Length: 303
View 1 (cartoon, rainbow, N blue to C red):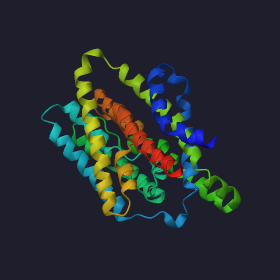
View 2 (cartoon, rainbow, N blue to C red; view 1 turned 45 degrees about the vertical axis):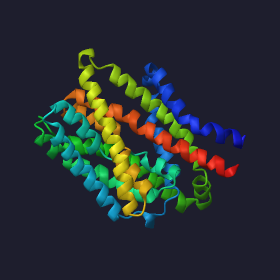
View 3 (cartoon, helix red, strand yellow; view 1 turned 60 degrees about the horizontal axis):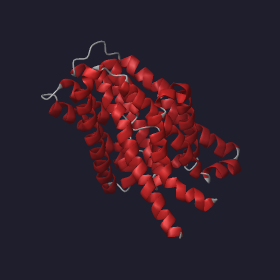
């Protein structure tokens, strides 16, 4: 049974993505499960972290600089081509690290504490800077309290509550905490289910856009793919200089696309939201490949 799980594991994420594509019409019925699945994944992952391991390092500041300055640079470079394209690609760089990024980082062998720390910093930076940058872009009715309120309600609790729950369990029941910490493999299968839902929602979202916007949407989707690959690559380089290339790659490349779609729909041209919607497929394709090759190496090592 163990060998069977090892052999089918590399194919689970691609199958989950294909399933989301095929059954996207049914995602409205199960999308409510996504936050709960992410919470459980983070809880299991955070059981590996000790309180003293959460600290801001040079990696956090370096990644944040690339996230903020890189997004502004991309916007300025693409603005002469098309404003909507510039906004769609900008939001793919500017949006913060995904709440599930520590899970994938742990699966790939990176530092979960480092990425968990950066995830919090990244989200807080976006909450503060978003109203300023959106105003610079000429968007109307930008509410600072609305932006920070959304993140406070929907993002920060999803990061902090699993962390608090894991540390509380460590104090209340060390044996149970140790048991959960040793079951990190469960996160992989929960992630496969989450991926099925997320990809399905993204496909439904893109298909709902008007047909006459297809050329512009394709250009935005292509741009999001370019910056996705670039961010994983740059994050790996930055991470290597700061002691953890995996945490660097996931911290910069794996984005909170749900938040990005909301910000684009709320403050930018709604068509710009195609960028983060397409980014879902790009980043999860990269994650699937990374996990596939890592699992394949593990299988070959055990043979």
